[in-house]
Length: 188
Image 1 (spheres, rainbow, N blue to C red):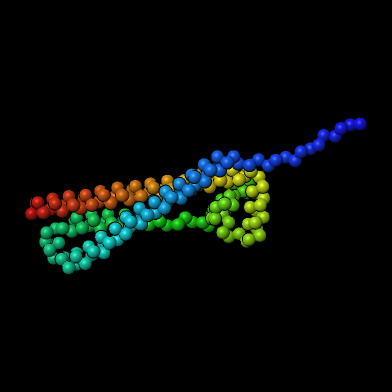
Image 2: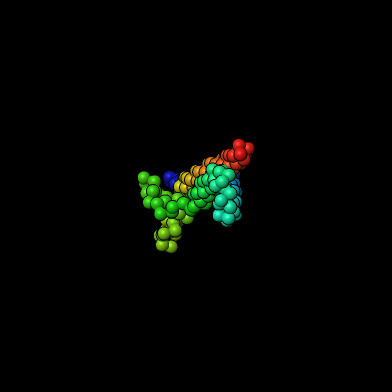
C-alpha cells in the first residue's frame, strides 16, 4: 500500500504587516506634504493677486507723480514679479492631466488599479474584474503600491521645486523693487 502524501493548500503570501504600515505611513505623509505644498502655493498666489489688486488703483490715480519721479521702474519690477509668481503658483495648483495615465501602462499592459487616474474611465465591471485579478497576486499589489508611491512622490517633488522657485522670485523681486525705489528716491 502506497501512502499518498496529502497536499496542503498553498498559503497566499501576504504583505508583511510592517511593510503595509510603512507604505500607509509614507502615503499619508506624501498626501499631507502635498496639501502643505498646495497651501503654500495658494497663499503666495493670493498674496500676489492682492498686491496687484491694491497696486493698480494707486498707480492709475498717481500716474503723473510716478512718471515725474521715475517710479515706474520699481513698479514694473514689482508687477513682473507678481505675475511670474502667480503663474508658477498656478502651475503648482493645476491638476495633472489624467488623460494619458492608463494609456501609458507598463509594457505588459498592466497598470495600477489603486490610482484613480487609471480607472476613472473604466466601466464598473471592467474595474471589478481587473482589481480582482490584480489583487489576487501579492506581487502585483506590492508593485502597484510601490509604483503609486513613486509617482505621488515625484509629483510632490515637482510641486515643491516650483514653490521654491516662486518664493525665490517673489523675495528677489520684492528686494529689487524696494532697492530700485530707494535708489531712485535717493538720486532725486
